[in-house]
Amino acid sequence: MLLRAPPTIFLRNGSTAGSLISPSSVSVPPTIVCAAAKGGSSNSRPITGVVFEPFEEVKKELNLVPTVPQQSLARQKFADESESAINEQINVEYNVSYVYHAMYAYFDRDNVALKGIANFFKESSEEERGHAEKLMEYQNKRGGKVKLQSILMPLSEFDHAEKGDALYAMELALSLEKLTNEKLLHLHAVANKNNDVQLADFVESEFLGEQVEAIKKISEYVAQLRRVGKGHGVWHFDQALLNDGAAV
Image (cartoon, rainbow, N blue to C red; front, side):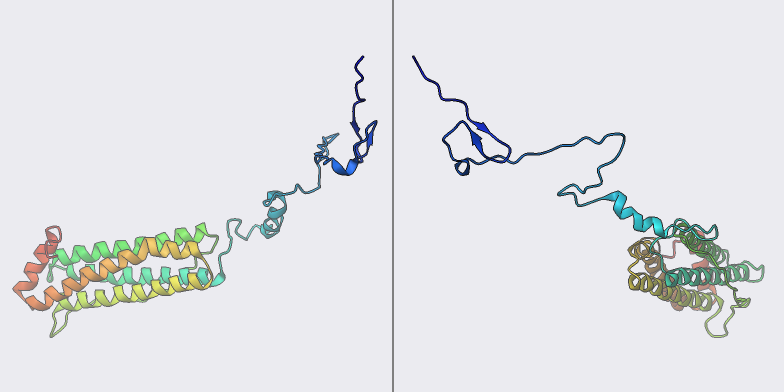
């Protein structure tokens, strides 16, 4: 007759019953206890290993959401200095646009009649105004407030005794484009100072590259007008501009 050893029973505390095996010689596997919440209550104990707890981390953001109707709900990490710099750049763009519009009106006169140059400055004026509107849209998108400032009255006469009107106006346009570029670089520096990566990217992608191209193009126009002098050469340059910018 075969005798069987009684089964070994491991108790919860690690001791055994009905066995000669020492409890210290047996490794008890770790137990995982899963408890289901009753009555719709949630388990508030943190789960080991979880790094991101959205409902905890969002609490500080909820405290930043304004309750006053006059304050923007979309504003986040947008410094007052950045808001002021954008409003300043809007004013710069409108002022430059105003000067270009005055140049368009001058060269479109019947006794000046340089239609190519007139159209160039008209398009430039519309472009600068478009830049101002783009900045206004961005200001509202970030939760800032657009504050338009005064625009200075531009010149109405651009004739110059030595240079002539075309060269004088184009040199003035080149100076304005370089000034605009300086102001944009200042806006970019303000964005970097306030760690506003989004604003810095907006200035880089929407303005700086285009500004460099504009400076290069008007620089070539100035160089060409200096070569041709006054008189028939200016008329030929104007005709080239009128025919799809063939002067470039």
